[in-house]
Image 1 (cartoon, rainbow, N blue to C red):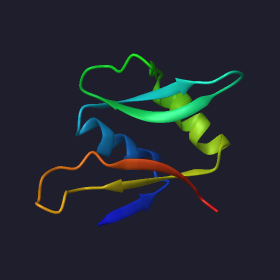
Image 2: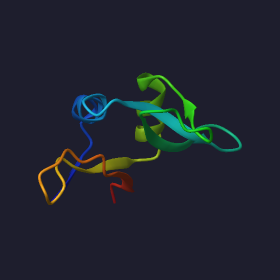
Image 3: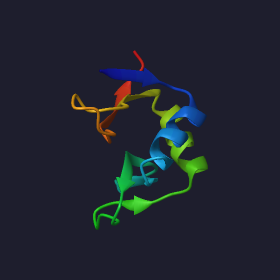
Image 4: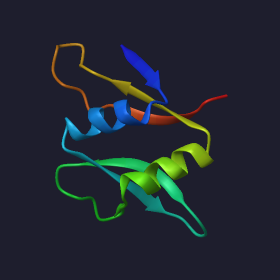
Length: 85
């Protein structure tokens, strides 16, 4: 079951409890495409600070769609950024 939130503290707790770090897929201009990077850093992702992450999150009017557990009860890392509209 997925849930959606815009609560910064909840998003950060969810990510950090899974060893996730805030990052972006760099794009031309300001900002980028938000991602949570897990485990070994991915080459195509650029790490950023949480403050910058949430600035982009708010600027783009996003919500965080996530899953706490998989269907078999394991901790899930499923997440997606979606429009609040």
